[in-house]
Image 1 (cartoon, rainbow, N blue to C red):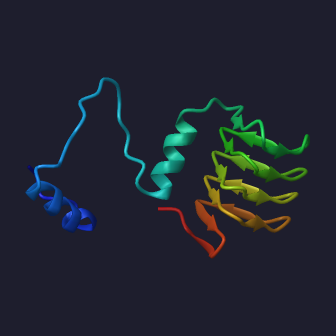
Image 2 (cartoon, rainbow, N blue to C red; image 1 turned 90 degrees about the horizontal axis):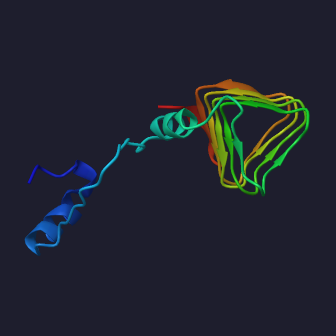
Length: 130
C-alpha cells in the first residue's frame, strides 16, 4: 500500500494493522473535491449557465445566477449576481451583492452590496478560495 496522507496516518496504520483497509473499484470518473476551491469547481462544472436552485431555496426574481448552485434553505436577494458560485448550508446572499467564483456556506449573511471574487465565506469570516 502507498504511504497514507499525513492527516490520515494514525487511522490508516490502525486499519492496515487490522487488515481493515478496503477499496472499491468503480466505473466512471472521479474528481477530488477536498478543498473549497475544488468543491466549487466540481459543483459548477456540472451545471449549465442557468445554474441550479434547490426547491427549498428562495431566489429573488431580479437576482441572476450564472453557472451557480443555491442549496436548500438558502436565500438570494433582489438584484444579486452570482457567477460560478456555490451557496449552501442555509446561507443568505443579500440584495445587490456581486459574487464571482465564491463558496458561501453555513449560517452566514453576506451584507447588501458586497462584491467579492474567489472567496470562501463562512460564519467565522472570509478567506481566499484555495
